[in-house]
Picture (cartoon, one colour):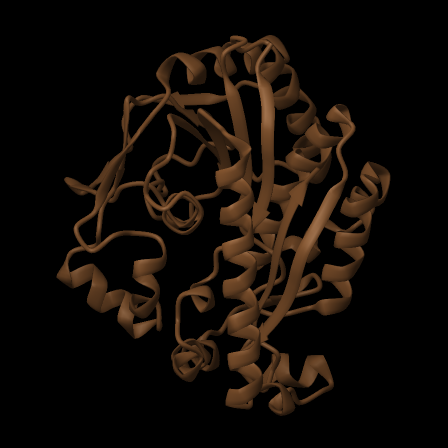
Length: 336
């Protein structure tokens, strides 16, 4: 039986890498964005501001943004420290893709990557320029090195996980190569790249990335399925060889682009208690938009319940970037 020596949850938003004086780059994109998700509805920016019933300008001072940025850096460093101390010789990352590699021709609900290598490819000049129009190019160093990187995959471990999940009636997809789009390879999406870069310092052990389509309609696994997936993952890990010391990561979340602190704290409270029933009572529609990444933490909670481990919240930092309350609720945690 393999041992889980570390379990971590980490937000991965661009504000974690963007200097606070540059957060307005994303705010400018927010103001142009016609589709902001908030509590089961979509709004353009003026309508979102009206729906919030509050102006968040008091959250936008540079001193406050700098304080929050620094708090996030300290939390990322703490997760990295705890990971380094856990002694893992294998890893599993639970994350999502945002049309980075999976397109309209194929979007798996669950996919286990079983390749020998995990490529992290820096975008070309054209793609970097496109990301710049959305205020994202400045954050590239947070999830991809300037020259790219190649990390070790874990094919045998991945295949064993696939077999175990299939035995438990999860019909997962499997891939031995990251897909190319129009003849161009993208590399591992940023949800995974951030963990490799900022937590593992570009020196990961053999790793199994597990893609969960929490955000792209229409085949998003629903909340109960995410909980069941976590229980199945735990059983799959138990069946792995004894010499594996595994670290598990949930990547992403919490509320964004529209920060909803009340919702974040309610979800955190349920996770901290390991209360699966409470986690299933939230409306699916509240996880629309990029808040969907919060669902990537559901399997972790379920698996850790089976291990009898409790969530330790290192920090929660609401990083506001516009008067309509857009930004991201950043959360960093481990399970003891």
